[in-house]
Length: 122
Image 1 (cartoon, rainbow, N blue to C red):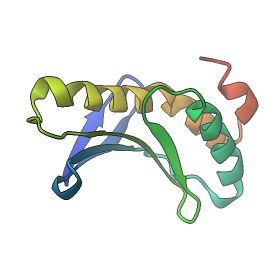
Image 2 (tube, rainbow, N blue to C red):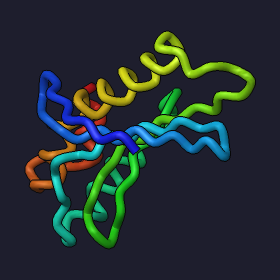
Image 3 (cartoon, rainbow, N blue to C red):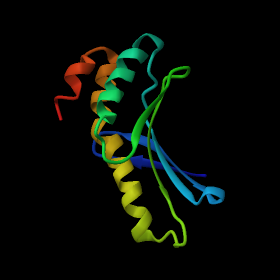
Image 4 (cartoon, rainbow, N blue to C red):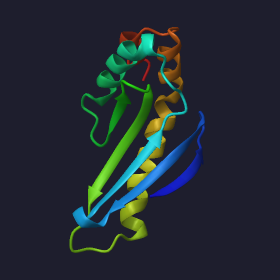
């Protein structure tokens, strides 16, 4: 697993890149720097489900026990080499998505933005 620091337009967060050679998979996680308090996890979980609906690639995940949020993208690479031109779009799509929604996630987690309004700010 490769661990990187990423600084976007909205915030900074950790990016984890995991190669699962046994399954020919490459998985990228952007780990949200906001740990969601227990009493806000249902609201944030509802917001993340709204974001995931219709998303053409990847998904947001909320670990209900810890409050950790991640955005995950992955690809299966069979009978091909994991070249820069193949992997780069996967990583950029991942970090740009986390950076794009980071501010709204924080507002929903803080209780200052209702989850049903947040996804309409697009």
